[in-house]
Length: 135
Image (cartoon, rainbow, N blue to C red; front, side, top):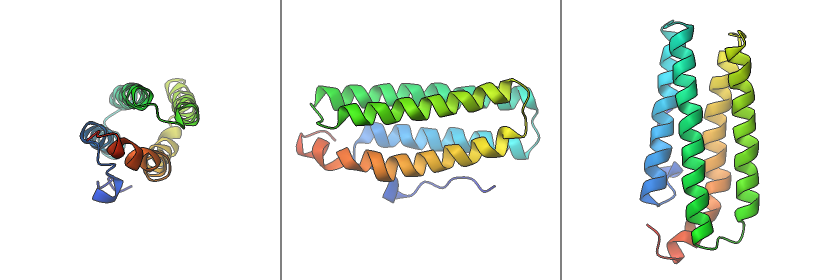
């Protein structure tokens, strides 16, 4: 599977969030490379955990920013974050349980999640936050 390539169409115009999204792309690509270079289960587990941990940190930052700016759709946004976190943790649990065939499913999930979440969910708050002066 090819690495995920960042494109400006994924930018939401909020510097910190865009930087966090780029970091997630980097981590996903690290996981992809670990899979395809056969770096072993320990490396895969470490990188996968790092992706999950950073995603949770990113979601928390994003929710705090939205909450502090009285984003009207915060409840739906938080709900989507919880659903995605649960899906990712379920995949991590399967992987840690010895289901190594899950790796391609993980990569597809992470890439689809990032693209879909940014373009369909995060883009919804772009104008709202910019109108509030957040950059």
